[in-house]
Image (tube, rainbow, N blue to C red; front, side):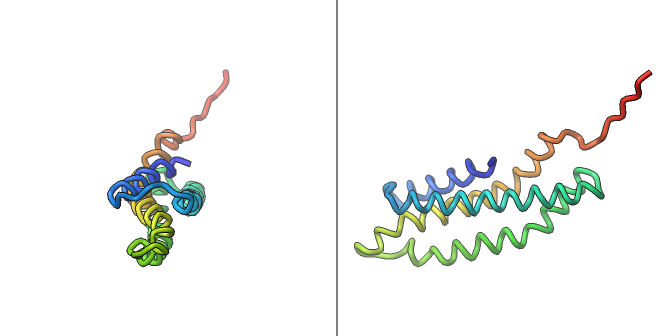
Length: 138
């Protein structure tokens, strides 16, 4: 869920840069965007949790980032490239779908970059040092 603010930064930022208003199609774009972005975050965190069974926290964070980098980038790039023609469409029919494309392009781009940088930080803060404490009762 921490990836959602990252995508909102990019989505609203690109809508503002393109001077495009929020419409019903751009709101549908937000639904698509949130689903994709949350899925990328879940995949990263799940991979870190799997790696933590066999390695320490810092190594698991780095290895999960290296392992999930290509699938996350492929998901982002395929969606962004597919949305570029819609974002550049001209005329009345292009204006109706332009908001959807702008929201997805801006949101996915910002979220991917910020998530890959910030998710390891959030994970390490929420899980502490990763060391197990042993309490011996007298």
